[in-house]
Image (tube, rainbow, N blue to C red; front, top):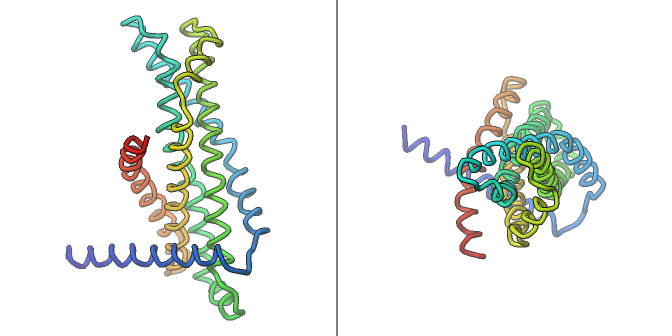
Length: 253
């Protein structure tokens, strides 16, 4: 039983790796479908703006409240801006936004491609001499790789501004002092590390979604199972890989 399970896991990893290689080759050879990439950026990226703003603002406000009242007992409220901004920039912004994208975009991609697979639309593309990788995978992966880091930055900065509001209203921290602490605490390496994580997470989400979509079976029931599989597995991989990425970035900088 365990041997069979391990065999299936390694087969899945091998097929996803093969899909990544095909994606890479398609990115550096013609034909290019730039209009499809732009269409997916608008659909996936701009469609997630509102929820990214909400999750960023709420995260910043809640963290400022928690750290503020916790540090107030020790007279350390002046450290709240630095702690909140560094926490959101390095970890919470990329993680929360990636989990959001995994739930919203990953499930959407897998359901769309899965439905096309069970209705034999992908076979029709192959019959017409068109590569499904170029038409379906490349635009969605590139759009997510472009959109996710930008959404994470938007969420991060909105979280910092949300923290500013709470810091001023609850703890009487002047906005000028708050922003000065934020800018002095953050560095270019923090921004680079955050965006690097988001690019990696975007690849994980979209490759898993596209792979599972291409292997969807059993009609509409299979489409539902595909979306669940993608959201669960991409979320687990994001959370686990974040530790190793954080360790790598600490050693790098």
